[in-house]
Amino acid sequence: MIETLDIAFERAGHSRITEFDENNIQFGKVYSDHMFMAHFKKGYWKDMVIKPFGNLSISPANTTLHYGQSVFEGLKANRAKNGDILVFRPEANARRMIKSAERMCIPPVSEEMFMATMTELLRIDRDWVPSKPGTSLYIRPVCFGMDPYIGIRPSEEYAFMIFTSPVGAYYTEPVTVKIETHFTRAAAGGVGAAKTAGNYAAALYPATLAQKEGYNQLIWTDGVHHEYIEESGTMNVAFLIDGTLITAPTGDTILNGITRDSILTLAREWGIEVEERKLSIKDLMIAINSGNLNEAFGIGTAATIAPIKSIGYEGADYNLPSVDSWELAPKLLKTLDDIKTGKVEDVHGWVYRI
Ligand SMILES: *Cc1c(COP(=O)(O)O)cnc(C)c1O
Image (cartoon, rainbow, N blue to C red):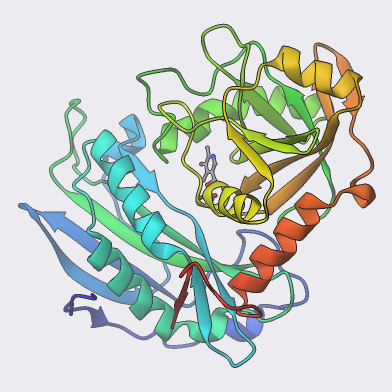
């Protein structure tokens, strides 16, 4: 399955691993010793190298800086008890990155190249995969235009990089969210389904306003009438209403989360009623007011499951039943953790072992 690629290797003169404390990891602050890098020139990916993590040199006219022709991915590796490195569903990330790239006119990195280069990087920096419960190695592939050209057209040259960062638990506490009914994350025909740079820049301002009001995260609603729930911050979102697990269908405006797919798969196997359908704010409010909203949680690689303890809507806050009383979200979290760390049999073929 894996292409043999010609990857040059420049070893870091000095490993920084002793500078990092597995018991006290700050998200996204420490990077492993090496990074993978390739360049797309004249129709091919070439100059593949694994080298010390370090700064890039780019033109001030770099097209990505100005116009955001950039896509990325996020996935995690865990350490199994026997020391093996287990990566969760990397092929799905590779395929999603191809889709994001196509939407942004970026020449896609093939699934084979993604897998082979990620594997090689993880082999070299395998000591950076932490083993403490709740910790993992976050893997960040990113691909962007490199032309030193300020005209607007697809870049001719691109860079593809993978670097990694040891991480602890993302959210430790249940979160408060605000239903956003003014700003829009994504519109039909837009780029909401692509993991592309600009989506996240555009979300910063509304998210900052919500944070000033005391919320941790936003719940985005549709860009037409702000009537239907879409996703939460950088996560998909699901609601357990009267025993039925409801989440918005993915499409143009909702990112096709791999955690989302994993959770829906598990819930269906457990005999839970699952509905992928539009959920209106109105129906959510009815469920809250009648006591039928059992659980609500964000779903994504960073947090896996982020339980929601209260929902703000039009200035009022609605509390959910105490997270201690929930059954589904904790069971989903534990099952996924056990699969990711190799504690239970991987019946779905989700785990890629290095
Ligand atoms: C990455 C991301 C998700 C979650 O996807 P996972 O594959 O589960 O990590 C959800 N929404 C947005 C907007 C994202 O960028």
